[in-house]
Image: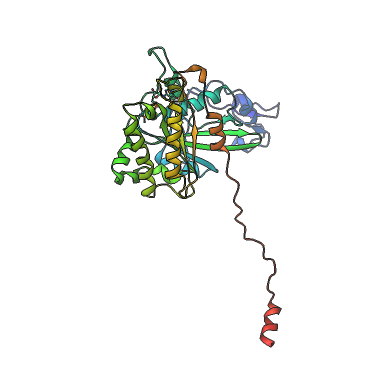
Length: 339
Ligand SMILES: Nc1nc2c(ncn2[C@@H]2O[C@H](COP(=O)(O)OP(=O)(O)OP(=O)(O)O)[C@@H](O)[C@H]2O)c(=O)[nH]1
Ligand SMILES: [Mg+2]
């Protein structure tokens, strides 16, 4: 139980703290000019005994647990300040959640690219995934648990700083099963509500699956099909940038078997560029490695540049009307009427 607040009086001759009676007979005692609770507020508050109490909601958003921002909270959250929204897309096990874990893990160690970590409203969600991605106590190798199809769409938040410039980024994550379902049944594309919010959509392309003999033919086709399904169903806003992130580079490096895997990937990049690069969307392809466990020497690739791209705001658009260079005065109309 918390004790009742003890009243304090700046008048040394007043015993209100002991008796509760104001020497100057003010009632209620808070109305006395000598009475103050400021000193109490300055005191060390000690341990909050109600730490297990339910978290307070701000603007309807449950912030204290620092879990994922849900689909019904995101619009309100984005309205708070200028924010960049990144949507991660990829089939099951493409590496979406691992990419998020890697960003968080690297930011914990220091600046990533030109950006350093300021805060996050989804700190616990990041920490949990990072822990699960890296924990090796009961596993042979670190791995990320699958995002279940039953798991709803969730958004991660990062506030980053580059010099004096602070920027907010939200990144979506959902189960790859939902994207696979939308690819084969385009009536489900409407359910991918995050696409309408996206400043940038990132398709994760698994380099290992793309070059594996058993999977490559199907994967090359289905990867393009997913992009086509979203574009043809007008699910991608026209100003949204599209980027392809070629992931798991550690799994193809140094593995030749008489084949040049890197050249195979480059050839596929060209195919993608020809098919999607000439559309109305800004389209680019990058290489990343978020968990270089198959080739530790390779290290993390492309994440610093990726964060710089994601967090750097596009130039501000000047919405002021252009100045009028030669305004027509009322007197000029008179000249027209007289002539
Ligand atoms: N070697 C290697 N493995 C990776 C890399 N990125 C992800 N993985 C592994 O790929 C597997 C799938 O990664 P996830 O991040 O769970 O994939 P996801 O896209 O979130 O998958 P869903 O949640 O099922 O949609 C995990 O075992 C990861 O450890 C990488 O860069 N290199
Ligand atoms: Mg996942």
